Every structure is written in C-alpha cells, then in structure tokens.
Amino acid sequence: MNAHTALRWTPLFAAAALLGACQSTPKPGPTTDKPPEAETPVAGSSAIASGAVQPVRRPDSVTGAPLPGTQQDFVINVSDRVLFDIDQYEVREDATDILERQAAWLNRYPAVQVRIEGNADERGTREYNIALGSRRANAVRDELVNRGVSPSRISTVSFGKERPVDPGADDEAFRRNRNARTVLIGGVR
Amino acid sequence: MKMSAAVLAAFLALSGVSLAPSDARAEIEVDVNRGDIRPLPLAAPDFEGQRGAEIARVIMDNLSRSGLFAPVDSAGRQSEVTVEPDFAVWKSLGAQAMVNGKVHLVDGRLQVDFRLWDVPAGQQLLGLQFTSTPENWRRVAHKISDAVYERLTGEKGYFDTRVVFVSETGGRLERTLRLAVMDQDGANPSYLTDGSEIVLSPRFSASSQEITYMALRPEGSAVYLLNLETGRRESLGQFPGMVFAPRFSPDGRQVAFAVEKNGNSDIWVMNLVNRQSRRLTSDPAIDTSPAFSPDGSRIVFNSDRGGSPQLYIMDAAGGGARRISFGDGRYTSPVWSPTGDFIAFTRQGGGKFHIGVMRPEGSDERTLTSSYMDEGPTWAPNGRVLLFSRQEAGGEPHLWTVDVTGRILKPAPYTGGASDPAWSPLIN
Image (cartoon, rainbow over all chains, first blue to last red; front, side, top):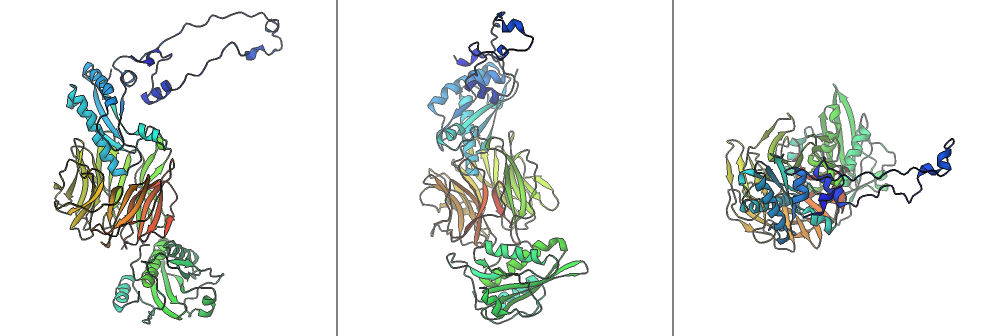
C-alpha cells in the first residue's frame, strides 16, 4: 500500500520530523569505491601498507515499521493531512481516499481521540483565515463522522495562517499550507 | 486652520498653566488634508536644563514623522525661553515655526515651560507649562508635540499615546508571538505575555488601561480582558468553538467578537457589566472582525455571505446589515475611524494586499498602500494616521504608518517583528 514500510530505521520521534526524513533521499553510506582513509600509510602499520586486507561481512539489514495503532502508524500509513483549494473548504476529490483511511483507522482503534486542526495559507488576513481554518477543520470532521467515527471523539481548532508547514512564499508552499491535520490526542497505543 | 478662542480655552484647560498666550492670529498653518503640501519647516532647538536636548529631539521626531513638519537644523543654537527669539536668525535658517523651552526641577518635579512661535509673523502662538515626574520626561515631550500639532493643524494630536501589538520573533516555522505595548514612537516597549501561546488581535478600550485579545491554543481559543496597570486578566468565558476578533465598544461596556460553531463564524456581543452574551448575526457565511462606530450605534464587519469577503454595516443591536464594499477584490479587517468619517480596511486584489479607506456609506474609496502583505490597520485617535503591518514575501512583518491621504507612508519607529497593532486613545 505504501513505500514507507521498508524504512531502514525505526522512527521514535515526532511525526513531523519523521515525515520530513521519509521524503528526503537517504544519504549514501560509505562505499568501497572510495579509498578508505586508513589506506594512508600509518607509521608502524606495515600489514596495511603491504596490502594484506581482511574482508568484513556486510551487516544484515534491519527493517523497521511503525507499530500499529501509534501516531507514527497513523501519519505514515494513513496520512494525517488533507489539502484544500484556495479560499475553499469543501473536501477535495483527492482527499477522500485519505479521509476513508483515516476513518477506517479510527474505527479500528475506537479509544483514540483526535483533534482536527484547520490551516490557511498566508494570502489572507489573520481573522478571516481563522474562520476559514475552522470551516476546513469542520469539513474534515463531518467527513469522518459520515464514515462512522463518533463526533464525541473529535474536536476541532483553527490555527488560521499562524502554523504553516511550509515557510515558503510561493504557490507550492501556499498549497501545502491550506490543510486540515488530524492529530491523535488521546487513547493512542 | 485659524485658532479660535474656544479651541484655545479648551486647550488651556487641558494643559494647565498658560504663560502668556498670544491671541494674535497665526499666519502659518498646516492642512492635514493635503498630504502633498510641503511640510512646514520647524525648528526645535535644545531646551535649556536637564533632559532639555532629549525633550526637544522627541518633539522634533514626533512632528517630522507626521510628514507635516520638516526639521530645521538649529545650527547649535539653544533655546532661550525667557526672551523673544531672534526671528531674523531663525528666518535665515529657514524656520517658519519654532518651539523653545526650558526645563526646571522644582521640588523634585520636572517642570517644562515652552513656547511656539510663528517666525515670519514674529508672534507667539502658544506658551504652556507641563509638570510631571522626572522619569516621565518623554510623556511631557509627547504632550508638547500634541500641543504644537494641534495649534498648527487645528486637529487633535496623537503623540501622547501607546500602541499594543503582537511581537513576532523566530523563523516562519517556529514563530514566537507575544503581546507587547510601547509608546507610539517605539520607546519603552515591554512584553505582556511570555510567548508560550499564540496571541492575536489586541485592542485598547477607551480607558487606554485595558486591552482585549485572543489566545489560541491547540485545545481551543479564549478572549481575555487584561488590565495593563494591575496585570489582572480575565476570560470572557467558554464558547462552543473558536472565539476570536474581540473589540471594545466605545464606552468600554461591551465587547464584540466572533464565535465559531460547527465551522460557522458569527458576530456576538457581550455586556461586560452583566456578562450576558448576545448573537448579532446568524448567517451560514463567515462573519468576523466587528468594529463599532465611534458613537456605538453601528458595527462594521467582514462577511463572505455574498461569495467573497466584503464589508457590511449593521445596527449595534444586530440586524439591518448592508454591504458597503463593492470594489475589486476581497475586503477584510475593517476599523472605524475614531472621528467617524472613514472606515479603514485591508483589501486583497491583483496579487497584492492594500490598506484602504472609504466613507461609512461606501463612497470615496481610496487605496493608500500596496505590498506583498499589508494588513490590519489601526487609527491614531485623531483619525488622520493609520498604523498597519507590512510583510515582504518570506520576511517577518513590521509596523508602518500611512496618513489618511496615502501620501505620507513610513516605517514605524519600532523596527522589531510586529503585527496586529492597535493604537490607544490619547492618554489622560
């Protein structure tokens, strides 16, 4: 279902940092093509200088995945944010998959409480954007309720334009900052 | 504007002792309605006595920042308040008006005598004395600035005032917001909150000692009343959803604000005496950012009930809403001028944000500013100058001022990251 399960390490810290790391290309580790620093002759190290090399077995790989029912599981395997069009709060067609998964996940873990945080891009004034973010948060709430999640498990808040995820000042940043984020606030395993 | 006996009398009542006011007509005058006029050359040589140079500098800075006065270099001359100035010399330096003064310490109190002179006419326009504590010398300088401004323009001054605002520090993703208050010239800034939560939209009450603001936390928002003098803070109480955009009524007895429920924001008002809240709008559209008219009878607010955010005016009791903005773009954050003649707003159009003004009837719309992000105007108490926040793309917001004609646009003296300014009334 997703490409993130083949993580080479187990994330234990904040979901935001985790997401960032997952989206970036892994840095290449040391390879044998590059001359190891130790090849430089060292005084008294005649064995290396003479070319006698002892091979070392490559370590077995360790795979990691989020524990089911955790914040990491929700963020990575479900996705916690849906995006909105400019000045709109109707849930977009391409968000319904994510909301479907969010609802299914929440129905599987009925003890979990969520808060939906509505956000707006910076191309609007402060107070209007707070109202707009509230509309977005509530639109997501309604979608989850329609898919069987009890309204008593859901609270909403709007951060307006005060909590962007992208610091940029271009259309791509604005696109990402127009969102509603579903945050697990209680009952997480 | 000529000085009338009534204005003079009111002025003297306000200001205390008169030294020897001239009742002669001023020949020089400044028209605040014409920002394109040449600023009046004004000299304010160092006052004699302790703090005299600093007082003169604050006066000069205030008046030249208004854009209506141009500082004249006093060429090292100090003021001699006890004798008539040598008008020929001040004329040769290019001064049309001149302020001189002397500072005395009397029984530990600071006493400042000053006079305002019409240089071409060789006449005294004002002679006043202010007394306060020595630490309060800046306020004395602001009061003198207001006196000079009022005498020469015929309009009330706005220098003995404060500004409450949101201080913004840190990068875009880890921004810290703190409420802060400072003198209108940026002096004496101090924080009111510690930065641990998002704080927005501070507004003064008519008393200038109390503010209302919104705190925004993950678990919800709250509107507070905060007394600046005592530090006492109280919440307006619990509401079903978000509560935001609070503003005092002109008499300070009510607060209008927006309450969100199930995604829909409407305007409410709370009577601060009996704590009863009443809903003023019930429209499925976003209604927010209410602002009272100075007589308290009407409220201008922001609504997207017509399909995009526009400005509407309704009765302060609710009802009778009608749209007043019909220009190109999206209109938000309206503020009624303290003098009642204009409504200032933020307009988004053509990919930019603008501060503009229009008559309460919606006529005479003027765009005053334009940038990547100009937002959140607030009026000086005399209704001639606006303070707002400006942010360039990717930058942090800073405070700017513009006069009501749009011709005098300047960065505000406070240079730190700042937004959501609110100007106090004149301090009594």
